[in-house]
Length: 331
Ligand SMILES: *[C@@H]1O[C@H](CO)[C@@H](O)[C@H](O)[C@H]1NC(C)=O
Ligand SMILES: *[C@@H]1O[C@H](CO)[C@@H](O)[C@H](O)[C@H]1NC(C)=O
Ligand SMILES: *[C@@H]1O[C@H](CO)[C@@H](O)[C@H](O)[C@H]1NC(C)=O
Ligand SMILES: *[C@@H]1O[C@H](CO)[C@@H](O)[C@H](O)[C@H]1NC(C)=O
Ligand SMILES: *[C@@H]1O[C@H](CO)[C@@H](O)[C@H](O)[C@H]1NC(C)=O
Ligand SMILES: *[C@@H]1O[C@H](CO)[C@@H](O)[C@H](O)[C@H]1NC(C)=O
Ligand SMILES: *[C@@H]1O[C@H](CO)[C@@H](O)[C@H](O)[C@H]1NC(C)=O
Ligand SMILES: CC(=O)N[C@H]1CO[C@H](CO)[C@@H](O)[C@@H]1O
Image (cartoon, rainbow, N blue to C red; front, top):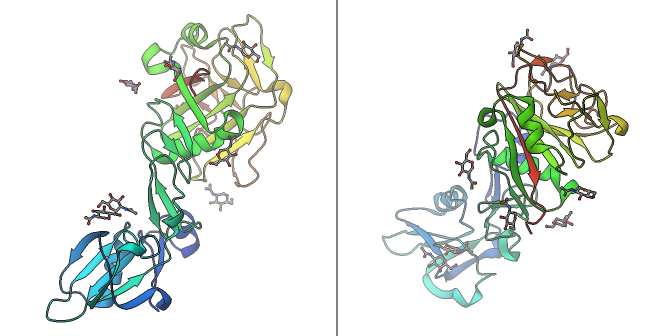
């Protein structure tokens, strides 16, 4: 039995981390799925001339849509056919043919686990398959519908799937977000944020400082208040998608629900007293990211410095701030 266990990217130091990120493919051609004198027709995605069995299996491993092979082993022409199906799914196409030798794999895509027209590829991740989602869907099985037109998150699939994953417990599997404020579009002016985002339930704030991306979600509205005032809720969280210590992305729920958010007419999105505070003044670096006071520290991520993890520095000037609200009428 030939057993492939190869990392697509060689930069990873050990197999566990290489495989946990979903990029390594594990594939084997067990003898009980091999048949001499058989050929699977109608599912050939590629034909490669002059191949022996090992090389043909290797080519199948490299072609992420390939799950079985037909090898022509008689005559001078030793052709290798790569199939995107196995005989288990298409017994009607499994033909007797003396010139061929068939080798199949356990195809985890057999049960069509991917949703919303995603492409399924066998052998990846700890579930033994991965799904390549169509636009607007994310999650392991592409079952999460998430639409947000963010210039910060842009088309970064990792950012989008992490953020949508963080939001599912708060807003469900389907969420469409609409922009109410973007500093680069509207200007770093208190008034514009409040005019456009006050009174909206369910907002997500996305902040970029250099290469660091973080922000927060809250289910209660922002307000313009002449005095400092706290918003109370247990449903707010702060998240980090890219941080100064190179830690994995994390989400942290509010700890002090009496101080989930803070409002002032001259202050922008503020989570806790200063866990994250966006403050546009005409002086530099009035915004603060002093994390871990009114919000929990993540249980699964070790943080060296709570004052610099999110933004790289405690007092910062955001490069971009975006605030989105949930489109309640979307499905
Ligand atoms: C196999 O590839 C063809 C395109 O060549 C595609 O139409 C079909 O859906 C694929 N089948 C599977 C099971 O991936
Ligand atoms: C997304 O926003 C950009 C501006 O940042 C705009 O040009 C584009 O049309 C928007 N796309 C959608 C689908 O709304
Ligand atoms: C989201 O979808 C998954 C399956 O795709 C389901 O198990 C889960 O219950 C759903 N969650 C919510 C909050 O709808
Ligand atoms: C916000 O939520 C509250 C409480 O559920 C509701 O009464 C209010 O109408 C909502 N506001 C908007 C703008 O949807
Ligand atoms: C965290 O602190 C430890 C001990 O001081 C140090 O060895 C490590 O390099 C630090 N890691 C980061 C990412 O700053
Ligand atoms: C001001 O903020 C920027 C990032 O926005 C940061 O690079 C710089 O070090 C900060 N300056 C001080 C004095 O904290
Ligand atoms: C919200 O979603 C509904 C339903 O999909 C859609 O008709 C409407 O145009 C959306 N609102 C905005 C402002 O895009
Ligand atoms: C190129 C090629 O032969 N594609 C075939 C792959 O398999 C599907 C059925 O799963 C056929 O419809 C395609 O013609």
